[in-house]
Image 1 (cartoon, helix red, strand yellow):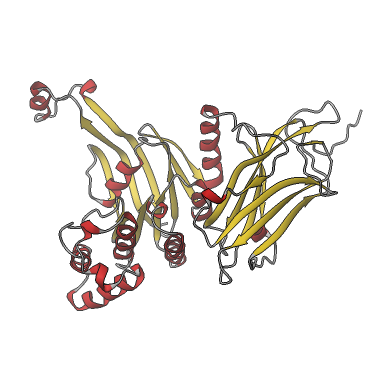
Image 2 (cartoon, one colour; image 1 turned 120 degrees about the horizontal axis):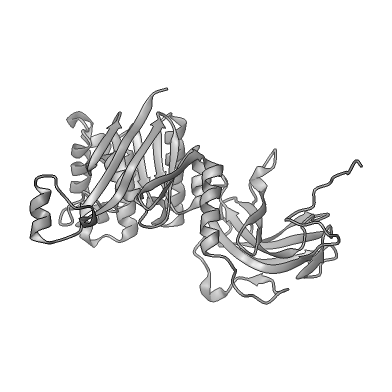
Length: 402
């Protein structure tokens, strides 16, 4: 197995004491430990060629430092980083751009830095401009006049048009409009299908789950866990729940209505979510094994709204996901077509939850099930009353042999 990225005992420290004696001693490699902040500490990691690898962790965990070392823009204080192949990185919006120069000039600069041959420069410039969808007038302006979304478009286009062997993406997909986010995700998927290596860092755990085959969790500069995506992401979510238990106080039995003053900019959006019994009555309390259904209204911005999918998750009041499903999980899934407004219902003929307090999270997704168009998280609180003395989350059918 060819390894695209190998980190062996990598650490990165920063001198935080500003006394002259500390700086003088640092010249001879003699630094007191309390004068150094270690952003990374003894990280060893291997990423195979063609793998889509995720990186998660809290703010300040050392994710960006690790990515900069992989990109070659930062050297480790100790340890070894071996990267094989051409690397393209989206670490910070506009990194490497000259703010006084035009978009055209910066495209040429990025191409030169990436080693694009002179004979291919014209093609590279044209492809970057076309993918970014920025007009000639905008590209003629200094990039210091660009919005963050324009920066994102130009940076992503310039980085991904160099045909890299390793693509690094650090939170870049959270910027820009929904159309370009979708376009960027499609390009990353295309890289994955071509056998390229993708190192994806994001706080959006849904995208990490959807894109990555393995994940590393960084915690305060150290590698806390590495493994398959679901195992590591679930462990990280459990850790976060321990710090952030509880849920927003809401009136039981109140459906979710989209506040017209806070409509999210999206081609399709959630308008209404409610938990009903099988007779169509909105409920906030039910017994174990009682039938119920989740009713959702989706509205389209225009008659040309893109097809979508719907996802529903039952969440315990400590934010533990109990069960989730989506229309694109169906064996022969067909995206939903929304014309003006459409009602969709998910029926549970017999809900086997045991006693507890629960909520719903509902998501409108694009046709691939990756991009979130709209969401209503932790809404429609309801209580389940168990009918027996069993404990836990759900009732599992069983038989005693005495």
